[in-house]
Image 1 (spheres, rainbow, N blue to C red):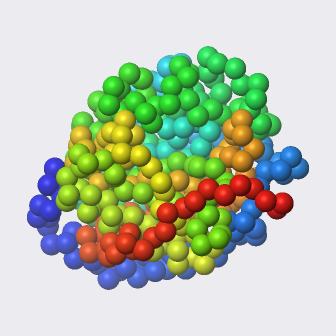
Image 2 (cartoon, rainbow, N blue to C red):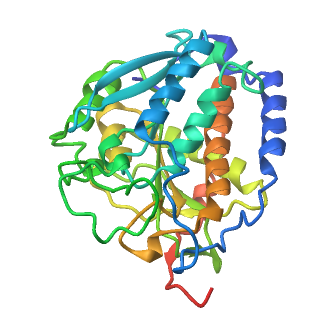
Length: 356
């Protein structure tokens, strides 16, 4: 794929309507809910970490089918099955092969679910309301739960040390106890095989955001981050693909930083192609971005968990990220995004938990 190849003029010029609507979107989503700040609340033995208010696999599928019935532009595709036989769903908005295409990938790690919650909210608004004007100019793919077995705690290893309460535990690894975000070269697991064979090899994708969660104790400029971002760092990535990744990251940074409550750093990550942001960029010439939101839905380590009151702003940060990049890609704004932020964006640093 040649990211610099010519597209029709409507995709090279930012539409005034999209730009104005994007400004309105930032204003709409900028107001943070109560306690929507990076300083907490942490899980400390008293805060609630409850999985009962998160979508189960079945409720996610039901919501996808409900939206499929309501939205003419939406098509659902089953791209494969998990280890335990759960269908893997891809939500597709395909308007024109000549349009740029973006893929959003969530929950490679089953205990990182608030990105999925945000992605479901975005799907509910695509083609309606505030997002009605973008679908003619972009193709959108959303894979909202790549590791459903881990998300449901339906795995073949013990969960005795997991902390969350509620209907279920959520695990990082899939049912085979494999971290599937380290499987993008060998491709041994059915979830990763489905992604590569039936999505990445089939659709002409220009951009991908891989959405994750990290721990709670990383800081930039002395403040706990709400998340962190990183472009591909493998030496195998084409320079034009890397530049596209940096532009995508610049859009995300500008959108989140402008809220007044979002506080992003640069993620510190490795160079291995086994990781999605590296391997997918190198193998398919897709400009990729990693976004690591703060805190996880379940874990064995208390320093990885946030209290329940943080769910709102992490979900909102996901919605803002997806909707702002959809608008920037649809309007062509992403093609002129200023990548100089990467020259000054500080790397986050882990610091031990204090007395908060």
